[in-house]
Length: 506
Image: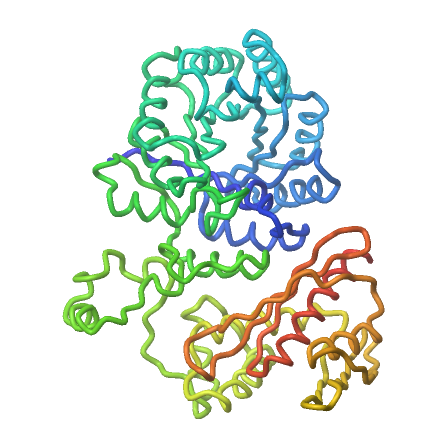
């Protein structure tokens, strides 16, 4: 039997630190539910001292998880941070406090301005203090990837003696080469007293594109916990991608002496969910979850795969939730066909909810020869956004051309169910639409980003628009909208962002 490797997901903490990927509490809860379906071992839910919103997110996720997963809260080596984390975790059935300090010469000298002895003293003190609140205490040795081997071993041995149950060895800057990082883990396994009695964790960043390789090198040399995120989300170039390390261990479990308990069939759904909520698109050639990960365009490849799948695919697409349905959805498809395909994608709709999705589906199917799985994902997301919206788009019409001035007429339904129609003009049709929406919604904001992507291949693909708006207080809100008409997609995206802004202000 191979070693069980714990999967520590930090999408909601380190992943959220990716610029533009911030999430509110409700969005974090949606992702947390998906993490539980993935069967992750530990959810790092946030950094409670950083903001009231993060505190509330940790508290509610701790309640949500129950016995299904350990819920972890991050702190600095500061007593008030640890107090806040303990308070946020007070209802958790399996709480863990994650505390630590920088251990590299750079961090001690330039950031903390402390000596090695002071570093060890602070490390022991924070672990001992956290131990007063919870039994499960994880210590992070920040920037361990650039630390001195002997000093790192000294710190780790000291915190284990102080009661740490997990020791996290991060390559915080993504600096290491895999063989060097593996040697660092092996050195600790060979030189630290008591390390055999605790969990050794690795937390690697992707600055040089090697986060997955670094984490696997850690596992090969004794680590039994990997810290990672969905889609590799995270600061700078991101973190180790959960889907990559898990599938690598599934392919090479015997060589690595490792396995996980992750429900890999949830990977595609989890990837798209995180992308939709954060507004961070996944590149098409991204391993495991990219749109092209199981696509074959070469005639030679197609011939080989049709004869025997594993001639070119080392992973069965079904293992990660891609699905292999042969049903082709068109405008002639009925409720039963749509319901079947949605269930294969992980969505269950009945009655009025199914009717609502079916109406939207027919609108798309009338414009396209074939409706793909990605179109359905976009339809489901669009439908969910409309259900929770304060303002909904009832109609939009534009007039433009040379030498006409672009004008737009927009009809919105407000929170009280009332409809209002206004007309405005702008430098272009989308600018005119947004000005008309602003007349009705009337919330101060600044449009900082506008991007359009095709949901699927082909000239008749749905267009998905992503916008970012900045509120008067500086907060950034992401909005998305999908439709066959790019003007409608743009209006929906902008309205979605404003609805999120208004919901936060309420």
